[in-house]
Image 1 (cartoon, one colour):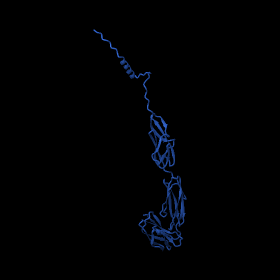
Image 2: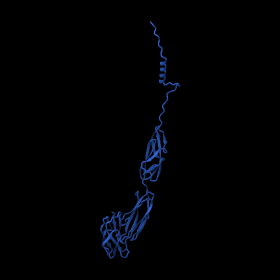
Image 3: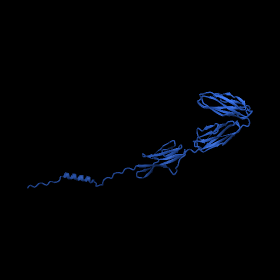
Length: 319
């Protein structure tokens, strides 16, 4: 038999096999180990907003409070980001916040103050109390003789933002005043004459926007002689006008005459220009086109002027 020749492995195949084995085993020319991947950078997981220090509770208008923002990383570490966060108020009419977290109270209400850092938002609620309006007036009372007279009252409040009104609680002393700017101030009034046989008393009540109130007491003495009273003592007419009347209740033997203070506003006396003792007065009110209300008096005057006039008030409503 013929002997077959022995085939030897190809040198190229051996080299390729070694290279593949070396690649699979991750062997290198320097014999080093595989590269470890770099872990991701820590991220912000939450932002907490709180007061800086131990002060808490609601604010009053005008007060300020510093807030702080603390960021917590995904690794659990924390850092102060008060200066880096973006601050925002949900209601600037209640409270504002500066770029560094300083809150300024404006008016009563509730507001949410937030801080955002790296797109993560944290917030806390802040309450603002109504303005405290401590109130005092001077004088507390005023007394007048039967002819009445002018009076004035000084009003002191504890804050410039405190608004207040003053109103009479008696029909014989029609008076209303409203403070337009707030803060301390004053008002003046005139107590009308008292032609009745009894003293008159009333209160002008001063009330703040937060509900505090104090009363200024007004007293007008009764007439010492002839008394002249209109009954009823007031009437209201629309812009279309109309007719009206009132009884004169006078002390027996006391003579009187009518003084019409509303003639220029279209009020004319048609009966009862004068008399002695009791009587009846009739009048007419012309139609008008005024755009504001007007008022005034028909007065019952004694001939001597020694005693206060009686009054019948007429209100002319606007068109």
